[in-house]
Amino acid sequence: MEQLNLIIDTYQRIILESESQLAKVKRRIYRIGTLRLILFAAGVAGIIYFWSESRLVISGIAAITFIPFLLLVKLHNRLFRQKDYLEKKIEINRQELQAIAYDTSAFDNGKEFIDPAHLYTYDLDVFGEHSLFQYINRTATQPGKKRLAEWMNTHLKNKAEIEKRQEAVKELAPELEMRQHFRILGLLHKGKTADEEEIRNWATSPEHYRKKWYFRTLAILVPLANAVCLGLAIAGVISFTTWGIVFAGIGLLSSSFSKGVSQMQSVYGKKMQILTTYAHLIHIIEEKEMESSALKRVKGLVGGEKQTASQAVKRLTALMNALDQRNNMLMQFVLNGLFFWELRQVMKIETWKESFAANLPHWLEAIGEMDAYCSLATFAYNHPGYVFPEIASKPFCMEAEALGHPLMDRDKCVRNDIQIAKRPFFVIITGANMAGKSTYLRTIGVSYLLACIGAPVWAEKMKLYPAQLITSLRTTDSLTENESYFFAELKRLKLIIDKLNSGEELFIILDEILKGTNSMDKQKGSFALIKQFMTLQANGIIATHDLLLGSLIDLFPEDIHNYCFEADITNNELTFSYKLRDGVAQNMNACFLMKKMGIAVIND
Image 1 (cartoon, one colour):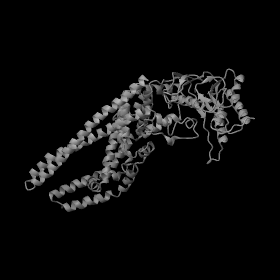
Image 2 (cartoon, one colour):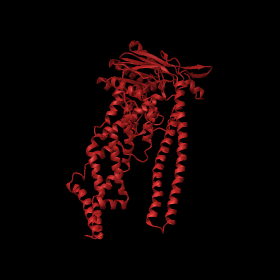
Image 3 (cartoon, helix red, strand yellow):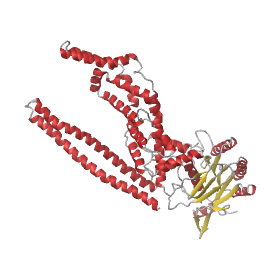
Image 4 (cartoon, one colour):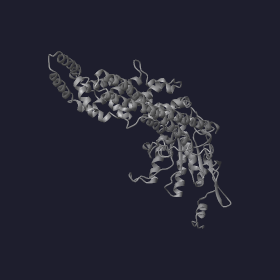
């Protein structure tokens, strides 16, 4: 708790320091705004007062007032960016304090990734409101959010890969300033952003202009023709009217291909402004010294020989911004008439694509990876009492002491152990309603998932073998597929059996097998299923109300162990310890609760 208090103090200190800096910036913004107004008014008044004087005097007044005015505009804009940055910094640190108090409403919950058919994420509440994803997610980019979701949807099953990711998370966890800087820059982008697929589509779209000889020729001849005509007009060889006609003709000619440029801008224009943000994020990756092999790989994705990735992306954003001048119709006509501006800019962009488009997916991958790593590192930083599990090299192992669910209140959560150290082996959990069976299963499942994505877990210690996690905790019927609850559960069990028959290593977590049938049929089917699991060398945990399943230990004394969660009735009151006990449950509470609620219970 002392370590957590230090983390809370750190966030509070950052907020106080940022608020102090923000107040200073706001005062400077006010003073500079006032000074701009004074300069502007003085300039206008001076020009009006000296209007009858020579042009030199008026030009001098304009220079003395408007040049400083423009410099102040630039400074003003920089201060507004500082203001936005500090406000976002205060916001994200307040969010961290709220998250420590279990309020994660400020974070994206990844509801679009909810999949009831997934092997485990639906059962374990990985996505959606109050989910594991929402608790961990600190991503600031679309690539980062997708990558973190991919990690949770498809956990690692390789010891070396998990350990590499653990090292990366450990390296970034203390880097609070760097992680927050990365997140703030990502969050400061306003407006709709292009996702990875849209950026890739743009990068691989065909070149329409640069490879056609007549467009290349026009890009050279038009400025040359304008320069010659202007020179001839100044020399008096032709009239300025003649040059104006040439200029207007060129402007009209340029409109013949403006439609294609307009279509490109309408699809990608504003969305591609996210590249400015990505350039800043790539620069952070380039500048960061990496120690772990996983982070070195991320840095390698943005490496460049002649030009850094951030410089290349900044160059592209500059070209895109220059092309945006076409949105001003007067500027568009003037620039096209003089230089064939649109054509030249589009050709420069196509030249950029030829040089760097192949690298763009790697740069997006680097941003996504770093963003996702920063989320896991923040999770590790905010939970100093969590441990990084030891990863076993041979199947099967799932051992932990004092394991807790990360979304449960740290002051109220009752933590329990688990011990599976061989193959095959099943833990059978019996117990009354509300005694803690389902919470225990979800704690095991979530902790196993966290371990397999390289994150720390809430335990004294933990060791596991990374098999494929698969669960059946909340099977639902499907009206759209005309599928009953019972049939949906059978399909999930069939999937498990098929995977085991194919030789796949699984860690199975089941809650109340065959819930959709009668007691005798359910009992017979449950016995048969567990026996088949034993034959297939499977491992897992099964929770059940059927106390007779505990008798399977007589058939498999070395491969099954019974644990229970008891409901205790003391002085006509029902109490739960939520503590895992050895053996089969002795007390049930359904009839007791019915009587307490005034529902008649008739005894035979």
